[in-house]
Length: 190
Image 1: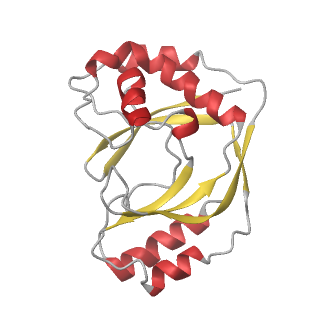
Image 2 (image 1 turned 180 degrees about the vertical axis):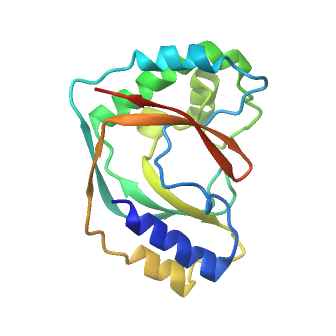
């Protein structure tokens, strides 16, 4: 069901070689944290297992899009934009609430250009929350030296989406070290 993401990752690798996020498994990020020290994973898992939803959340892919001059990567981030819905925002805030007890361990040395991003960073440890969060499936973040008029990027922007609806009834926590990803655990929401 996430086949289109894998296909585009292959196209980008063939045409642009290694780029940021290219080797990340298909996913939609709720939040990313950079911890100053190791946290108790079992305690975190117990906290996150408390999160429940009444029914499955359905997400809809709207279109292919690019975050030009992404404030995190300083590149152009190709992604499939997800239609934001109330249930998805509630889920993000429930997850972030469970992480707030680790707030003192989160590195927050970034300064972003938007005041609201900085307030979210201070409060939640993550800048993109609620209205400032644009849920999406990332393909890769292309180095800015490649022109936005590149034919591959234009083809990506014209990509038609056939399977648009996805069911969300779980989430997972990953440890990311450089380009390596290790799934720590998965939580069922129902």
